[in-house]
Image (cartoon, rainbow, N blue to C red; front, side):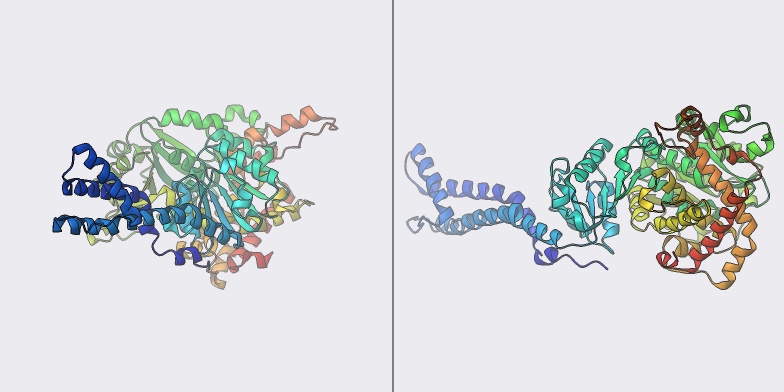
Length: 629
């Protein structure tokens, strides 16, 4: 558990000091003006002479250098007595507060930061940075750096330093030699790259430091995942991870609010689960891509995603340009590395990774027109994710959807009473609109769909702060490295593409466990938080489903590779001037590996998937993953 900041314990009057610092000059000016007016009233001289003397006498009050006993009017005399003490009091208080705030507090903070070990450093104390600091301070010491004035920003109980991170030695100011994690969360990805470069040059980092670098555009994310990649993200000393806040939010949503938590999975049909994503915001797009990469809920059927809202067709064209697998077609099977031996039936069973329906109309209108029921044999969404940029619009859409669904007799008949309520999830910028107020009322509990709202900032922070995926992913990589005889097993040496593959495998463990019949709460506690283990009977359920879990893993692996491997290569050979057959290898690298479209996998691939299920059982039995490796 983190220690309470000594600096915060020693400054109980920080709010008072902040107010005095901000208003002290104004109050002092008002007092001087009042004193000047009172002196003018007490004199019987010419106007200009009174003005000059009054101002002079008032300024003498600052040093208690003027006696007011000579004023005849007792009321004026008492008022001037009061001002005689008030003016120097506020003058000295303002001076001390400025000295305290601008000099002493930063000094005390630097001393405290230099004494920290295994602390977390956040560069960029905006909405994401403050939310992350609030989550991290439950267990860790946090140092935040921003250009903002640090006073008034310490509510998260972190140490906030005021520096220009682009032109300051952050390694020295934040004591990075003893830090555990560094988060570069400035909005501009170019600024984050510059800070990363400056930190490397300063050579003031601890080995094995974990570094999170925020990216803002899809193009930057592609460069980071590319098999050539960016030089800054390939380090033998540090574990560097590029992240988009919206990708992290999508991951947290899928982990916590997965559709199989709210409705049973169809294990034999062509559609395993149906969900609806509404809106064309960055969060909506990230959620769609996340489901395409990891949304395998059955060894047979696909996840059906209904993407609804005005402008989704244009948004889909933009996504398809980056992720061609979303628009895969059997006519171009050769472009995907397949040949004549790849049947249409098998190709369409794996590509695209999800079954996607676009509805370029408001979602509530689609419900009223029964567009979903007609298209999907009355399979209503397990979860509806409302992801507009406007929180108000999310509120209106969620309410409209709930009403439209409650008025549809087919929804009531299909879902039925007594079943678990399905979910309408409003993905808000700030969760303060009260969409889910009174959700526990008996009348609302009988509705087929309930409404819940979440904050993008808080989901991002919670997902990063409580992330356990790397612990599990490293074990999965060891399994892969053993079966493929990989010599270099250092996690830090892996490309981001390879790390992300193992992280997705770690997250998918929860889906496999729920498919085997283990309760959602137990799965979350075991997989995501590491504070519970499976019983012997629960492990038997996993064993009984071994063949189906292996098939699910094969489909998940294909989904990841199809979504990320077509442009960048799935098993590329690095550029080497001595390579004789460079042209052929580069051509292969820009295609999906042919084995992904083989219905019968090679023996070593089948052995690897069997070992992955074995390791999954080991993970679910142990809270401390490190001890099992």
